[in-house]
Length: 523
Image: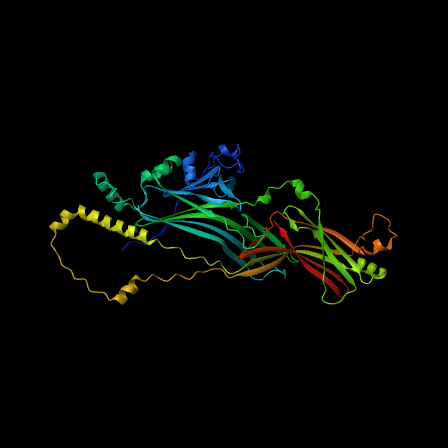
């Protein structure tokens, strides 16, 4: 019986290689600065090489950048339309990561080291995770939950399983070198020194000597119109709350990665896993500063409601559509009109009314995504593996045939096993129950703008004596704006996870109150 299977994580090496291929005219062209920059990650040395057009076409994707992540057992090459240089504070180094957009295809190829076992299973998966952590320390804000919140949701998961078989037994020559390789393969427990040195060679050499397996994943589309894949982001902030200035830490991130898992057929060889992080960047990040600062062309007025009849009507006016970058201002207008018109009541409301506009954020994680089980090997591949194992045993039997002939013959009787016991033995083990975090929903007030009274009254630029034009104007107006912050979470609308923003507007006058919740989008 073979020993326990363990997963071994080897230190990866990240290399970015720019390839000049004949792509369509609409594809992005690599800049001159990126084409000459390579940022290695310790402890291995970086390698800069070039792939020819035929090798790139094997991936099935024509992108101008090839990012390489290498370990002792395998090499992962991912083609991307662009790359981004990120700084690793722990290692004090920089490396380039592949960057994709929501309509791109993630693909590349995996090259197994020649020293790996001949047969096994190679699994390639892509995963997108939203993780939100909020550790509250004696916060007294009533709008926040008393218990710490920790939510993790896998909103994207797809796996491709590739059965890897040995070369055909008929094509393998029976030479002394083959016999020595058979002994070395049987006794090997880890990659040899030669394989370690071969991993430091260029991509071109490893692609010709190792076994190559292409892969590709399509980014899923939203179920409803307007749904977009969450972009990659990571934020951590210290939130001050309460009258005593108590605080808590809030962290949120969206990450994507491609994972390659090699499971050898030999029980004595450890499994190998290699992860490559990806960046999903939306196209709306590439906007000019003039477009952000420009005043909106259209405004939409939305009324405020009350649970009982009140002698005035209120409304809030926002830009249309209500989409705001995290580095911009959120302008708004709040107006009121007395019903019926009363000059004395209008003056009283303009002096004593309280206006409150709060920016509210809701983070919702629904039931965890039910992932389909990993598909088993196909019958043909399993049959090939069984045949290969039998042929491997027969080879060793031929090698030790002379020794076996000299040994005395011993007859052993194997007791019969009933069919019921055989079915019980061959029955697969049940799947372990998955421990997933419970769904939760959290709401918190981020910013609040409060003002006493309406400082202005709208007036016509023309003849103010016309009663018809003056009757259509409100009795009071308040102009305000909310300064958004860069470290805010972008809005997310995806199945299973959501980050939504609202404007809670309320006007309080004596015992009368009018309010409304207006949905907005912050990206």
